[in-house]
Image (cartoon, rainbow, N blue to C red):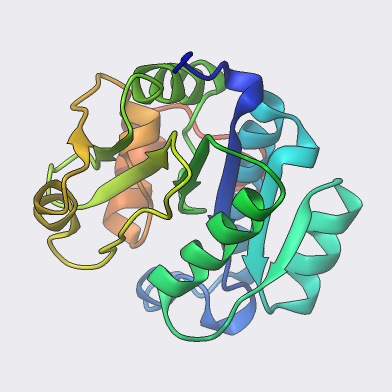
Length: 207
């Protein structure tokens, strides 16, 4: 099988949106504009890498659906059965349309760069299924498949160990923006201090 190019990939991004999004971050920074900025910075990078038509946003939020459609993304309804099922619904939609290279990225990577995402997809292209662990090695930043099967998913606590146990190739890549997710004030502070945040997030923080 020929390895997929970056333009062959579809990327699924699940987005809660609204008051339900980023509940841990909201405990200390209840800022809906900031939460949306983090999501939209992530989506902007994905769109830049794979083109808007190959970005699949899974959501039930009206505002996020409108934003996605205006940007040229596909919107798939979140079935409401948790994060893993939301991701799988996006993967199934892409595969039903003929996609064979599909990745899943959560919408909380405001320091992600296009080159990092390209590198992650390129590294994953040599594997039937793969995942990139997050910065602490316990969670998961990116999951991908290059075959026709829907990958088994285990997002949640300890997901890196679970994804490895499910048979996905573990790729410990030196891609700090990809591997650093923002889900609370401490992780946001780290990203702002040690990485380069996307323009929407910087603007929301008054930078």
